[in-house]
Length: 231
Image (cartoon, rainbow, N blue to C red; front, side):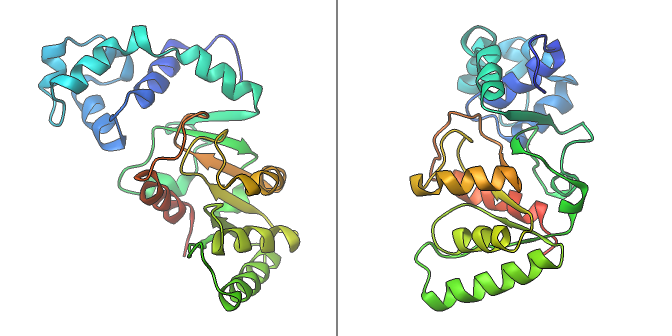
């Protein structure tokens, strides 16, 4: 969604996704209790704390988010870098992700998803890959890409990089799922590869564009790879 006049409900959804420690499961509990993100921000601190998993600290964060989180600034940053925001309740949201236990409410996407990406296979492997491991990965990813299967991986060193590069070289599509924000690509040597993926597939993250990758984000990232992939 690239525009200046964002609807209030959209702004509220994005703001809730930006509150520290409000992950997909906590968000689901809040929406079950209040009905919408707008109503979450209209709730009192006591009402927030009545929700399972919401303690005093998190209730204060949610209560102060309207004043402390500049959603419009985050959206403008995304727009300036060609990053699209996709809500879970829209047709653009990847269907496979709605089937995992805790899908993100908001996705940040750079590139162009296509219906054919529903036929996808995920590659996850070591960063310190052997030559044999890289060679087998390249053979598998290249063969799948030539057969019209989208290759999904995490843009890390080693196996991930080999899988993305092989898919691109075969003229196929590939999706990179990033642990941090899409403006915080790691490793730094994969910046050019990220640009190539955006041209021949897309990059995806549940983190806002400028958030650096945190250690706990990598296992979270892997659940998105699994949701986007058939195998």
